[in-house]
Length: 397
Image (cartoon, rainbow, N blue to C red; front, side):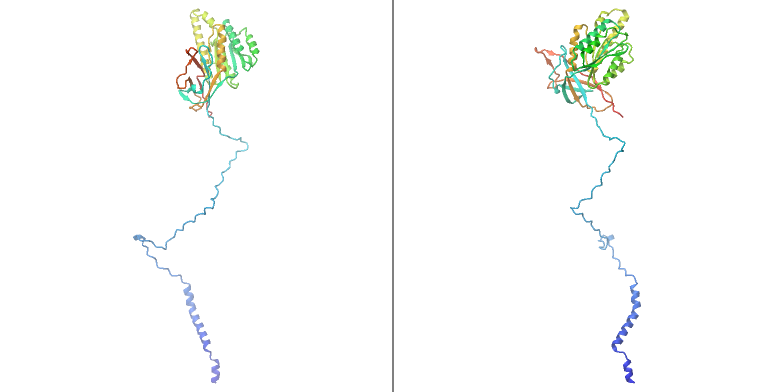
């Protein structure tokens, strides 16, 4: 019996294994509960910033940004937006216009009306409204002319028609093959007798056809106004040879309007030749009060003719005899064909349509007034022929 009990008793190793399993089974619930609890919070670190001491090292840390490598190119800039005009719209450009003034100056001796050559740009001083301008261009001009003869052909005193025909013939005889000339007459109305031509014979034949005048009215303002309008369609610089008594009797255009038209026309020079001087001299002091009024009218007519010439840089003549005409028209041809041309940009660049007054002086190398002498060292007087002003362009708003 004792042998049987010894067979079923467990061995010591097996007992130890069973004991360890029992201990583990008892400790498992405690370990599971302990793993589910939150971690313990560390005690707070005392902050001494309030007392002026250093702060804690456990605060946030600023991390510096990394610099881009030197060889790495920056990103490209965005492309500029392209603006495309509508298909039905023409290309638009900006044009800035700098004002430029051209002044033609004739320098003639008073006694002989000879042109004075050999002047330099430094001999000229140009003033606009009293302010000196800087000359940027200078040359001597001698070229063919484009001229319109405006002749008074009215049924008044025959001496006026006689003087007109002689003056017109004298001018036509001095024409050159390259010149363009037209002939217009006026009394109460205007008439184109000969259009622009280079054939001198046509002009002479047209003058010869002026024999029997029509009306006695003399509308010189209307004729001159129409002549300026006609010349505005012709390119380049033009000339008007006005051969008339200067007396106006029935014009629709007033003198003020006529003067304004002359100021606005920049590229036309007017030369005036007064007719009927002998008839006027023979009638002086006759006719009582009516004669005095007539004389006053002719004095005013002379002043008007002289004003038209002076404003445009022309010349005014009052020939009494036929023998004076060749010299007078020689002076006109010299003044027309031989000139100095000055160009400058005005200091006043405003395009306001205002009238700018011009003044030209001749000076020597030291800035003193220029003087001329003849072979005997006697002083020679001279005159400068140029426009007394111009009207600036009106800016388009």
